[in-house]
Length: 223
Ligand code: SAH
Image (cartoon, rainbow, N blue to C red):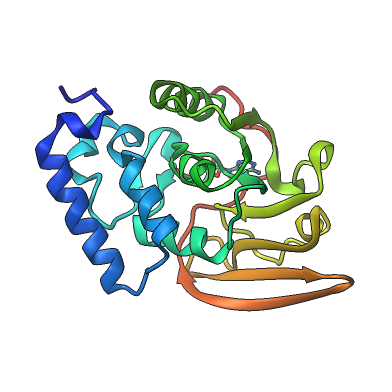
């Protein structure tokens, strides 16, 4: 039953998930809602078949189109940092597998997520449909400039690395909004950075070292 996303159907996956949750707690991730979302969204449904047994390890894994799904601890840390509320409209840039969007969708009203690979977005949409997740709008678009059509957003999460702080994206936040993005050299380690917009001020906070695939301008050709 390797293509059954229902974790209830696979007792081994349940055991792996339980030890992942333990590991996240050991790393200091304690937000009950975030841990609850990780418990209920089956990560195994978002990774290629080849990596299904590794889905509950705290590791980034390769996905289609040469991209990666982030490690669960990074997903948990970013989600916690966003301080999500059920009324929030969240913009995600870099849909990838669709896993992070599914986690955000559990904890907010609506998620708009942008991906430059049509193939990835279509795969992600199939997974959300299969899991009955209906509050995500996935769009094939270049997210490097955000999504002005629906701005402002309560929260913005960038899951691909940019060399410089994303000022255009901060401009698409509501007053009091939070943006989390990996900032730094695209071929090395970046700093996960939190930007909180307060009137005309933007406060920043360093959340630690991360390694993301690069944010690339334009829609991907061919795929
Ligand atoms: N959040 C994802 C992982 C992100 S991987 C998950 O949960 O699986 C980063 C993704 O950002 C890749 O899929 C890449 O194609 C996408 N990306 C890179 N530059 C982009 C851009 N300018 N606009 C939209 N998506 C982009």
